Length: 242
Image 1 (cartoon, rainbow, N blue to C red):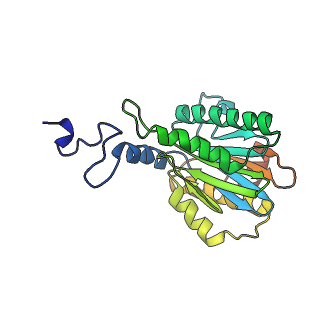
Image 2 (cartoon, rainbow, N blue to C red; image 1 turned 180 degrees about the vertical axis):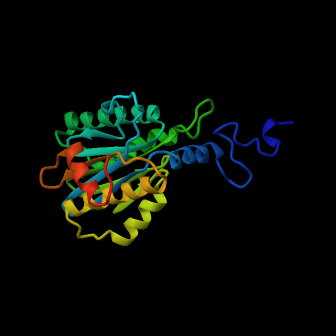
Image 3 (cartoon, rainbow, N blue to C red; image 1 turned 90 degrees about the vertical axis):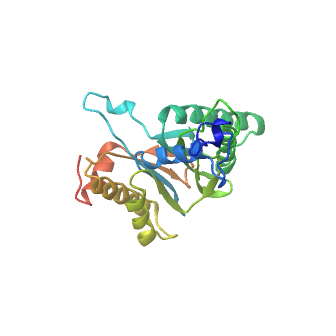
């Protein structure tokens, strides 16, 4: 009798669907993502904002803890889930970005690099002896098509968003975004909204506020990390301080 015939045994290999059409390993990967630090992205006419909670141990150097990374000058990504898995995908995204620049002499589109990373994630859902990448990434940037924001799923799918959040504080952040997001937000207003979402998400879970914010301006097409002092100023508006 096959081991997969036993009830509840359909999660022992990524290549086996359950009778109701589910891949449990992918669902487990998404559960890992949902329990991770909250990340979010907001798109507006003036650019894209990426935000993330940062958790640092008492004896850990704060500079070594990152949830937001630069892919190219005009593209950034925020990660949630296994940082080790994300590191591999980020390296590949950077290679794709540089290869595109060398081959076509132009910056890579945000959706193109997102799709290529999702191709890798999808590949790891259909081969025995591997597991899905336990990470979701929010790609944000500015390219010739405009300001773009995409989120990936461990299954290898991706979707475009005007604003989105994922992680442990997703529900709180999404409620705020649904109420307060407007398509005509200025970049400054988008930053304030991102900080508010992350502060409230941390407060709900009674965690100390520590936030990273990055902006990609449509004017400069450059990604910039906001300083801790600047983020602190925004946080004070919502009654939070480090």
